[in-house]
Length: 212
Image (cartoon, rainbow, N blue to C red):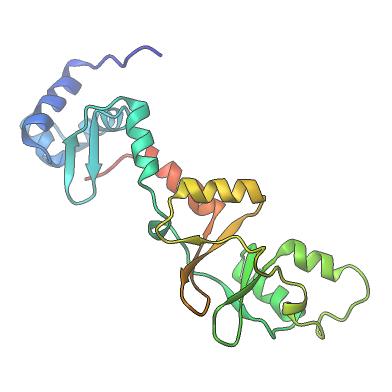
């Protein structure tokens, strides 16, 4: 791939940021006697190309890295704790029918099952419910602990894990989400969930224009 060729204004922006960063888009525009909206495409190009980095409420600063290196560094720094969602949990004594209703009301693909000590004891997926629903079984009389996936077959992650590590687990296990847990001496406390949607949204954020 050939290197990006910058125009005169983009080079001027780089010089300003090198000498004055971190600096906001409004401050750069003021120095060039232009509007912020006029500069927005140039700032987006310089940021995505890795010449500039940006932080909300801080400003732009010079990176000087090549595109691939800048993107790689940003991905490597993305951690579960910054993108996790609120977990959807049920008690292990809940009946399958009620759990199915709960799953669809919450619009999630998995439920995390807690024991009497509020610690992770199992995971329920749509496949588990589908498998149980086939036949003439009374779903109002089957507790979820009879059909859930148990340890050591539960895949989970910690809030300090990177999204890359989690993505690899999701792909290798062919599942849609993981419980985010806090490890304790008595078991695993569920503190969040991370899904393929969370990870996709996080990676797509790398292409967003930073409006500072």
